Every structure is written in C-alpha cells, then in structure tokens.
Image (cartoon, rainbow, N blue to C red; front, side, top):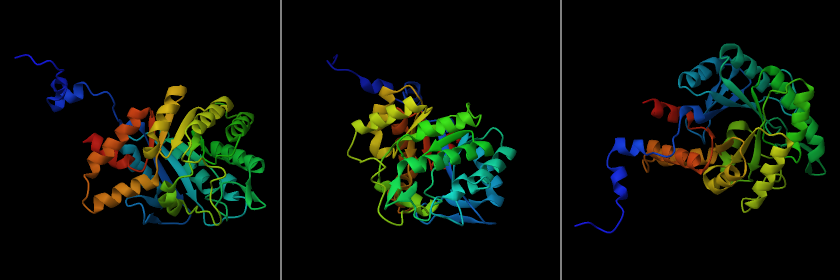
Length: 324
C-alpha cells in the first residue's frame, strides 16, 4: 500500500549513496594551521592546555613545516613568542623578529607553502595588550602606525598574506596604505574582521604568552551578545581593502559566519580557536567522545555555515583522517 509521505531515507541507504548527495565537503586545502615559533634552540614544548600543539624553535621549524606540507596543508599562520618584550612591542616589527625569521626559513625551503603572518602586538608587549598604552587604555591611532610597520616588515620577509588581529579601528585601511606604499600591492589582507572578546581564547594565551597584565580586551574586541555589530565591522574592513574576512571564534558563532557569508562575496574564514580545540581534546582523552567523528562534524558545520577556509589546530589530525 502506498503511503502518503516522502521517502527521505532513500538518499541515506548506504555510504555510497550518502556520499553521492552530500552537500558540504571538508578538504585538506581548506585548512590553515596555526604555528607557534619561539626564540632559542632545540625547543619543542607541548602547550599544557593544548595537547598535540607545540612551541617550536627556528632550528626545528623545517621538520615541522615538512610534516604540514606532506599532509597536503597549503597554508600556515605564524605566531611569534619572543624572549624579550617592551611597552610598544618592538619585536613585532623588527626586521629580524621571530616571525620575520621564521617566514624567511619557510619560504626558503617550502616556496609553495602560504605563510599567513598574524599581525598584532600582544605577544610582544610587556603589558600583553594589542597596542600602545596611554592612561591605562590602548591608544587606537598611535597603535596603527606600529601595526603598519609590522605588516610591512612581515611582507618584506616574504609573508604571502597579512592577517591583522588587533581590532583597532581603521587597521585595514592603514595597513593597506602602508603595504601599497612599500610596493606590496599584491599582498592580500586576511582581516580578523569579526573578533569577539571571548572566553575561548585562554589556551592560546598560554601558547603565545599573551595574557593581558591588567584589565581585559573588551574595549576593542567585540561583545559576544552583538550580531549586527559584526556586519558593521565586516563592511568597514571590506571598504578599507580587506581581501578575506575572519570570524573568531567559530563554533559558538556559526550564525555570524552565515551572516558574513550572506552579506559579502570575499572569502570567509572561520577560526576554530584554542578553547574549542582543548575542550574536544580533554573529552577525547577521558574517552567521553569519538574525537575523529566529532572534529569532522564540527569542521563540516563551519563549512556548511558558509566558511570557505578554516584556521584550526586540528588541521594535521583532520588532514590525516581525510587522507585515509
């Protein structure tokens, strides 16, 4: 007897059938792997709050990047962890800063690997904030010049993409002008256009040694309660010259990823941040979840929400699973 309802299960009847009609795909080429580079020698320190993530010194960088390259990952994002810090973050824009030296080494040995340089001051300032401090607050406009100097220094070292993460007003415009004036008109900007003041960043601050020494970053990073503000931020960055738009964090902000995707044609990048990574790792180590299935499900959710690319600490694991 014919039933008066739809047979949706016909398209789920086997693994091959499900693959045939699958709408969203995660590929190794979608990943950008964050890499923490430290000064010193023979250093490979596992970040306590991020199992499987390491701080790597320059002399060990080749082997680390070789593994990333052999897995088919096409891009990495560099974060520097300097030995010395000062009030204005000099190490960020020094020609021989840790990110600049790491970039030169990578581009020497892995010409096709895309180097995305995180452009901020927080890892390099003694106070841990993303700009210059005046009267207890971050001075927006004075910080912009140092950020522009950092971007030019990174591009000079060979960075393929500049990724400013500071959330100063006007940072894309000032950096775009500085890059153009220095002859780097073809270097794109991957803007942290929508960056929330999130509790999910804790493990990253362990890895990058960038915890603020006073206060917080709520005056320049976004309020997690706000949605429309994200659209204003993204629009400003597009108008100022951004080539990519990052939404950070990703998992708790998939609605924002979709909003940005619906309103802009530029590539959208979801940043699967440290806290999202560490929670999964902790649950997996306790045997509470199937790590592979959960990770691939959430990466798929980010792509389904509209992300073209994903910055994720799971990139190496996910690439191995996909290659299998």
